[in-house]
Length: 183
Length: 309
Image (cartoon, rainbow over the protein chains, first blue to last red):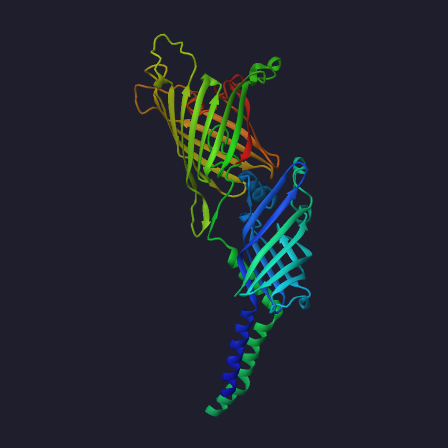
């Protein structure tokens, strides 16, 4: 009986420990930027959820497409309805991993550049992406994560009519800015 | 017996159970799946508001439940050309047009105001539209969107009726509408629009000042970029038996053409008017009179330019 009690305590410890390795946010900030000679389009989403497991390097990001805010209300409506079809595909997700955990020491405050790769799903289409993420490990259990990568509407089967091809960039800059807190 | 059970419990079941639990916790791919499913519940909103019931704040002539949006300014230009029946010499009516210009501003996502002017009787037109409910699913489940739309119009045409005194109030008409709409799916949206119009001055005592009408409108998806719209305003007989409504109901058929950035509305209608007291209560020509009546059908368009302030 003593053995099983010890095992139980051990299990409790392990599970507590696993949660202890998790950093998360539900108010992450992602914005994208489409720049053409005709028009500059920016959209902001400040309700992005992210979980990072510092033990395994697993990263997950999920956002609602409808939470992107544009300056023009009609543009936002068109984005949701005509382009990314938010009623059909409400979420965009990233499921990935820090591929080289040796580049970062989560117990030590400082700046680290880590490679992340994984699957990005937008408009129901999944592509593999690789990007470098700038991590800043801060005191009081906070990690800031910043990254920039390029996504192309064509890779995600987003249909752009001919008359709008000059207005919407073929390569769209996506910026990520998260402040993750220890769970 | 008792001891055998105890031994089985201690020696076999407990270690198996604990190792199973350990396996579940420690398995990395499980952890990743777990992260994704927990993220799903973190972003899901409690109430999902249905967007874009109609492509525009008008179905054809009448207001839809759509708003222009918070801090948005629309400059709207609408034309109804002359009768199609004018033939080739007038390019089927395109030589002349009745025009409506307006500026429409969204004070919030639920409230807009507008000021317009139409060529017809040199009329100024002010209006407001308030969204009382918005169709939604989820925590707040609302089957329909309901708005309240009111307008006031003032004609400023030169007075040329010697039988009547030129009274300022006589130039004013009021309209109140309660559009109720539902987007059934991506393909079809329907709206009913109970309408009350009061005209301060009418042509003769046999014509009612108060007009009650039931508007019906719908939008049907043809392709991702084109929708077909139909709109009909049925005018009820006046409640006062001494009076009669002898005008015609307004029927309009049109298309929303989405170019990716703008929506152009092109339509055919049996009224050249664009403000409520005129097209609902003042339509004179029928669509069908011994076959299609081209003398009573007008081609027109609504376009708008958006300014984000």
